Length: 333
Image (tube, rainbow, N blue to C red; front, side, top):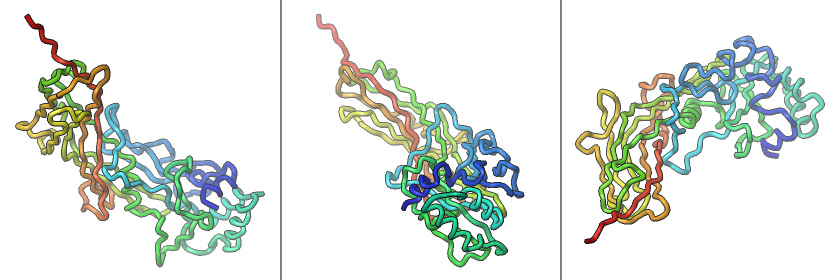
């Protein structure tokens, strides 16, 4: 049976909200406020610009507030996916015993056997360490999680000989931070405007704003387990796509350079003149402008710390606009 199957077998019990239904699990969390969240509220972002929380105790904070023209970072690598699930520290042995006995009381198979398995282990009472529980990025459980139902929770002693591959690490935190990052869309100005473009008449495309790097920190500080990772997205290039092969050029790319106010297109190459060679007829062309962001990560809350490996894929933020291109009407005499 899959992890999803165990969720269904347990009815309303969800791994990300296991226990008494509070944010951090069942009671006895003397290290934190009663809600189980490090700051006392599961919706507190930890700052004015933070996206909020992930899982049970991971806090996410971004350097800049997301605005109406921001978009979630899109990976330039179509095969890259953020983690579906991971283990987080959740319970002391006594808390774990209380959780199992209260949440699995009267449970049917396979949940009943799982509870007995933990009881036979005596919940590791008297041992030093913590029970870590699986947490999901999305609560709809539609993506496959590599954690098996035999290990819904794992016991992690202080001197762990070999970490579970799904156990939370700074690298996993960096991937979760990447997936939470909001990037500004490139604001471009078309001249003539997008609803008045003409065949064989050059269309000037200008980047109308400066950008600066954006960083997002994902961290956990719970029951003595403390770690953080920060992803840093630096704008590198602007790419313009006319939306049709009947344009000259169809695409053009400009590198961004650092200025006093941020990153911008070098002033000598600030304009990209696109010439449409064919009318859009009764329809439109999907004009796009994209910023490519180089993304690195550090294994701390410091965005200026040393970059870590393995690296993360470049990020993209895209502005889209439907443009209308008409034939120039000439009068013959």
